[in-house]
Image 1 (tube, rainbow, N blue to C red):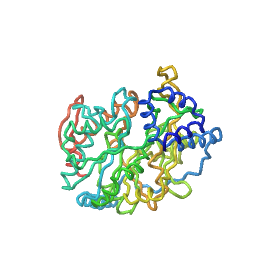
Image 2: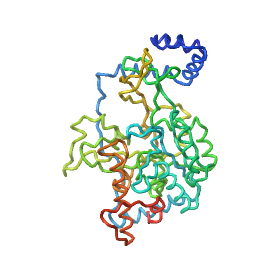
Image 3: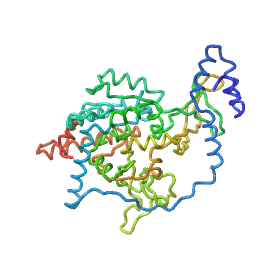
Image 4: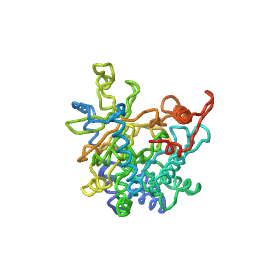
Length: 441
């Protein structure tokens, strides 16, 4: 959009405070402010605000939710044998360079009391390796074990891409070939007040937020990386988020199941540890697999028990997926269709007096799991929480660095004990990511 179009749009949507701010800037700052506005989809965010304002107070109707097909943790000999079959299939895809790894890392570490991208946070119990180092070393270990090229993709945001790239470069990409590590950005959307007013972040920028982890579907396509990967023979993408240090990167069993089923998107789940745990639920809605956010459940339904006294809705989403690259391309060829969700959060805003204050803001974001109902075929695998899920969400309490380090210590200790080692009860244990791949998966 040109200058007059932008100013006209601001006037149309009643953003008079932004217009006053713009007209009070110097000529140089006006140019910078316009550059910022040109890169944002203002009309889309105003339309979203209207949509959610109309829906407020109505409430979303709760649909009938039924169990979806899930392959549970194998117990019987026949189940274990079948697991070995799909593991071999998954390994073959890695050897044939058909798999890439994507880590969603657009967030900052502010909730952990940490300055900078969350992926830089030191997480391992002994050496204090960062989350980025942990994942990069896992990719290297898998590539060496299977003698395959496993491209690593990092989705950053506008606020942390440069720092993320510098971090990898300054550490020589943690032993990976820098030419096989790719960075791209998710889009940003303006944050609004509940009254629909744009918020200033500073003199020449609006306050914005990343468009959610679902934004990788669009970002990967628009960056040009998607067709590049397809040309190189990559067919499947292993997806995870940066805040779970227990992720089993490029798990061959998961890859094999995904490929054997011919799924366009596959999901890992764990059993909810308690009725109050706030996780999305993998289930069937209107006959199709989907993930339903815990906030969309009536509280009594979310806590409901089955006939044996276990949670009726037990399959908790851990944000680990396998996704077909052709599925991502198909979604983008016909327009980006994922629905937006609204998050209401306290934000730091620049006031008309030039001072920063905390106000309430509306952020709009997309979730990758909302693509599941669009897939022609899907798959879901239950895994062990103790082996694969201990996210770092908060500074203290559950899902904190302390709980993640304790989970890593316990898991790595078990590997040593399986190998016949004696480990002192008080010892802190940390194994290299390659240890996971020396063991039989």
